[in-house]
Length: 90
Ligand code: HEM
Image 1: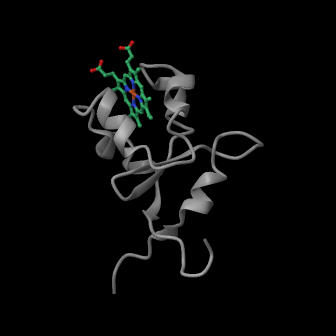
Image 2 (image 1 turned 180 degrees about the vertical axis):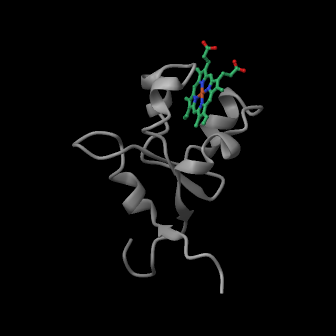
């Protein structure tokens, strides 16, 4: 059977902004990462990084630095897969 990754819906992702005592999660190309442990090391600073928190940041990431290999850098911070909202909940 396949690896039991956590399936993260957009509404779950939306609550993970790094505020209210919760970690900041970021969606990138179908995967969701916990970016909280990385935040203090981000060369662009924490506020800039958090622009992509709680959402699918694929587009904005690609606009800023498409050459950055986030997948390797955040491999230990993988939360799960970004999936569609279940039917009838939108
Ligand atoms: C640099 C923004 C996510 C890794 C930067 C810089 C900005 C930025 C503005 C330029 C800083 C400077 O040179 O003064 C953002 C935004 C993000 C985001 C808006 C999300 C929406 C990430 C993530 C990673 C990352 C998830 C890695 C896990 C880096 C690296 C640099 C950088 C390695 C230096 C790149 C270089 O100088 O070639 N970021 N970042 N960033 N960021 Fe991000």
